[in-house]
Length: 157
Image (cartoon, rainbow, N blue to C red; front, side):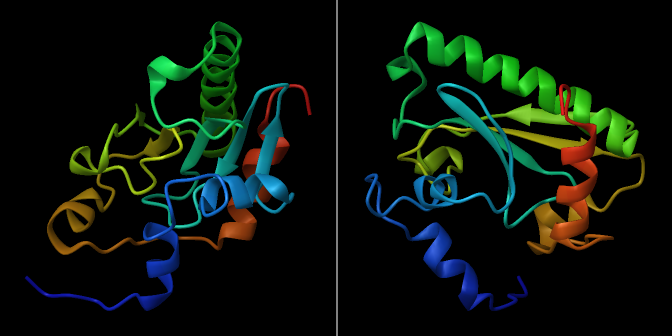
């Protein structure tokens, strides 16, 4: 297997599993790439996207397990996923979407200490095989352009 060194990604995936060292908690402390904030949840762009538009919806509270979410957090989280899908469809007109969560490091969670749900637009003929086989992402636009498109399409904004 060929390897492409991405040393800058190390600080992201090696962040501590506590609120003080959590990369997602740090993102939520600012406004950069925060698409939406609710009372207990938020939506952000993934800084290392698989596709343009790759976003994540997460509780603001640092919590690692889905069953640890309060009923209010759970409801608001799924409302955020719903709004994210609406925004992605409006901004990108994808042929499909992947929505999911990786629970635990062995399941693929890059930040296992802070539960989050991914939403990714997909197209016929996109380069998904490169992610699976070559661990390479092909993105047609800059993250700032993605933010502008999705934020403009977010319901209620």
